[in-house]
Image (cartoon, rainbow, N blue to C red; front, side, top):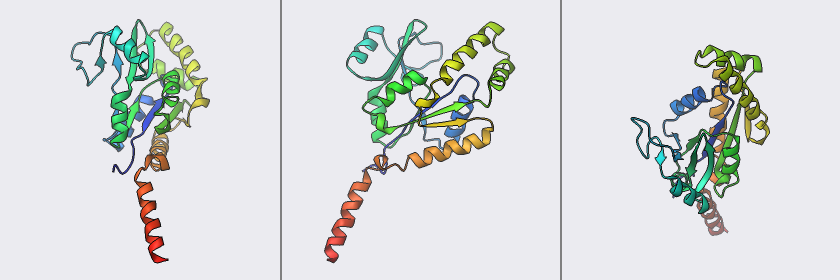
Length: 213
């Protein structure tokens, strides 16, 4: 029997709050944690590999999977559908494999409400201040003032849903936040429901106890 079941680790944050950096650090701490491969109806870009970067599928196929309940979560973004196929995720959980999800609050809510929701660990990252969040977006030097303003508005919409997550971390010190993130993952791996072997162990203890009577 698998020593433990895998976790669906959802790490969400507004743009600029450190999600990408902390995702990399989490996977550096434990390389067995891997990203969940999403499905999409958009066309592959040069160099993208089906099943590795995305599961590329037709819109008809995608909608059929949604109707059949085979998508843990899904969304329509800029004219294309994106989602998380349930089959590979369930296989990973049963094999003790942790998956990291890069999804927003709506996707997180769908996953938590699914029949695999009991294995979900959701974590939201807050910036230390709105001023600092804005500074980080500007310092990237990638976007115009107009784009940054739109990102800031979207960021506030994301932040407004912080209360629906299991854990919330204020990322004002990257190293400290990393330590807290690792502690949360380590503790959640020990939840009773993540340890299927416990039932057999308790039965053995019971049999041993009865033999002593």
